[in-house]
Structure formats: C-alpha cells, structure tokens
Image 1: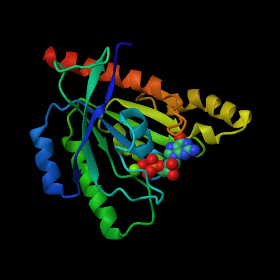
Image 2: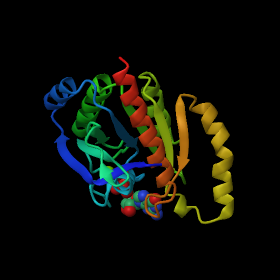
Image 3: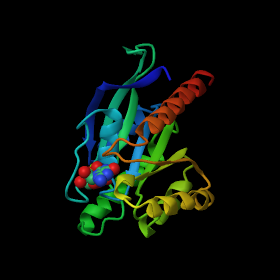
Image 4: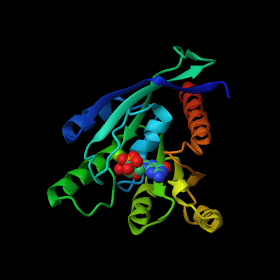
Length: 224
Ligand SMILES: Nc1nc2c(ncn2[C@@H]2O[C@H](COP(=O)(O)OP(=O)(O)O)[C@@H](O)[C@H]2O)c(=O)[nH]1
Ligand SMILES: [Mg+2]
C-alpha cells in the first residue's frame, strides 16, 4: 500500500454543540468525504482515532460520557512519504457516545438533536465506524443504535476494540466464533475488525480499508 494517513496533518477544526452551527456546517459541506466514529462511551473511540490519526489528536477520557460535542477534524493522505496535494482534505468526526445513563435529561436531549442533524445532513460519502467493546459486544445500546443507523444507508464498519483485554485463548476463540453470527445480524455492515487501540493491533488493516473507502468516494464524485 503506497498511500497512508498523513498523521502530522490531522487537525482539530470545531467542537460543535450548537445545533444551528452544525446545520450550517453540514450545508456548506455537501460532498465532504470522511469518517464518523460511533460507539458507547468508553469503548475507545478517541483512542482508535489517536491510533489512526496521530497521538493525542482526540482526548482520551477516564470518565465515561465526557464528549458531548461533535468534534470535526481534517486530515490528508500521503503517498510514498509525500503529502498528496492533488487529493482533497478528508474529514473525520468524533461523535458523542451513545447509551450512557449518567447524563442529565437536558444533555441527552441535546445529544439527540445533534446526532439527528448529523445523520440527516452529513455527506453520503461518509463511512460510519462503529466501535464496540470486544468484551461486551452487541449490548442493548449497540442494537438500538444499529436500528437507528440502518435506516440511513451509510457504509458501515464494525470494530471490536480492547482485544488485548481478552487474555484467555478461550475468550478470543469465542469472539471469533461470533463473527459469522454478527455478520448475519449486521448484514449492512461491510467489514468487521478486531482491534486494540492501545496495542495498535489491527489498526493497519483498518487504515488500509479506510483509505480504499476514501479513494472509492473520490472516484464516485469524479464520475458524477
Ligand atoms: N486495554 C485497552 N484499553 C483501551 C483500549 N482502547 C481504549 N482503552 C481505554 O479505555 C478508556 C476509554 O477510552 P476512550 O478512547 O476515551 O473511549 P471513548 O469514550 O469511546 O472515546 C481509556 O482509559 C483508554 O485508555 C484498548 O484497545 N485496550
Ligand atoms: Mg471519546
């Protein structure tokens, strides 16, 4: 693979908590090519972003449910070590975690408003990356979220993170056995990965798949 993510180009752009501001941004970026990171609080969304896009670009939190904003970032690709100036800037979105009980009513209302605006307004050239905890896959909140997501028809990858915490061979085997079952259950999910954001396991494979997605979107837009 000649292309790679140019980690030193990853840039934080906006933290959006204001619906009107988000709506305006979405209207201004109808063809943005990018990635949305989604999952329950604490599954390792920010850690995965950091592993993919460069250390500490996203804040890693010790307290679940801290990110209440939609954080927007940009990045570029590199080819043989050189930044691809001929390719556009790409986007990624660190979305606030779903299914966390310990937030106030008002906060969860704002979460719903933001998430709803996001999914209704974000460019169709957005790959949704759903991260789940490999030790506790397919929780009620994950199922509920997939019900919601499937209505929108975005290409979706599923990542089971924290596999380093599965110490025993037996636990890993159980997760592997789950793969065909999950593929059936999440039929619209295009690809499934097992990762450790902490140990960087599986991250190269995810990066490769992300890059092919981005290049495919460029082709699609150019042929329009
Ligand atoms: N052991 C292990 N811990 C992880 C991994 N990914 C994230 N964590 C830890 O899980 C906690 C939550 O991570 P964070 O990225 O903030 O989750 P987010 O709320 O989904 O953004 C932090 O303490 C991380 O250090 C992983 O792959 N392995
Ligand atoms: Mg986070």
